[in-house]
Amino acid sequence: MLPEGVDNEGYARIRGLMRLCVLRVWGSDRVIAGMDPWVAVDEAWASMAEHDFRSEGPFLPFALRVARNKAVDAKNRAEARRRDRSLEEPIAMVGGDAEPMVLADVTPGSPGADADYFSRVEHVEVIQRLAVAEEAIYDVLTETERSVFLAVRVAGKSRAAVGRELDPPVTGQRVGQIVAAATMKIRAHVEKQGA
Image (cartoon, rainbow, N blue to C red; front, side, top):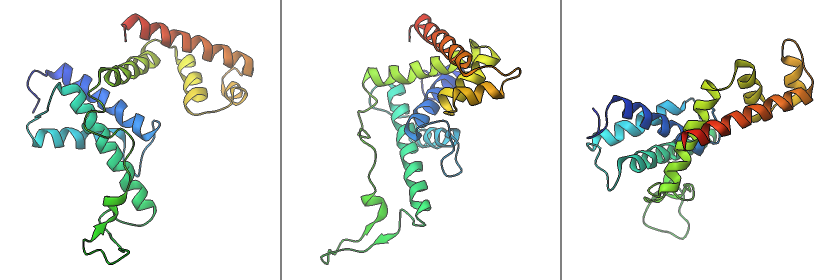
């Protein structure tokens, strides 16, 4: 089931942007508590489908907001599990308050989780730029540039360590040159795409 005005190509594009939104909340391309980002995207899409994709305003900002909220929920659930507590677990009340509370009531969300956070155009543009940059990593860079760039910029490995892992091995200085060239190619692709 697709929202009105969204074809299969738009569906794939929106879901890709939702994935990037989830990764942005989680901080990097990693699994949170046994979930990959597509699970959070699927939860968000199913949630929107249950309500017939009704949104106030444009659909894309709404979809990104729902994905972001699902990512925050997954992060909170992971934190609660790490502490061996359920978000639905009652918490002790101080001062004899008659209204029982659960951990979810007092677990802070992230700043900007309010309803219009992603409705501003600049936030949608940031997610779209991330999608174009990710596309550049896989479509524009050579295999060596991609592996070196991801190892240094994403995995945080030292240039010398990455250089030793290459076949044939290269110096840390050469790895720095490869990363710089890859960064320039990614920027050029993003600018060329107008994102």
